[in-house]
Image (cartoon, rainbow, N blue to C red):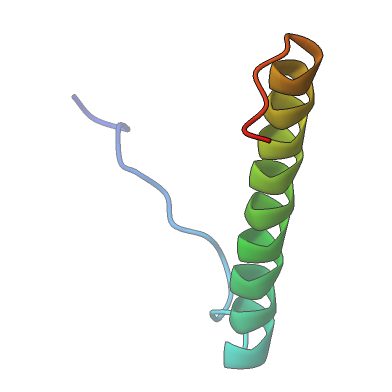
Length: 53
């Protein structure tokens, strides 16, 4: 099959600090999302009377 080559991105790779910023940003966003889901589950459990106190 001719013409089925995978094209790479043009230009040089991003600087290390930009890649690090993306890594930290994605990590921070995932931690926030996990905290939001955990808080929502905790609230739902308390509303259902499933408290440990």
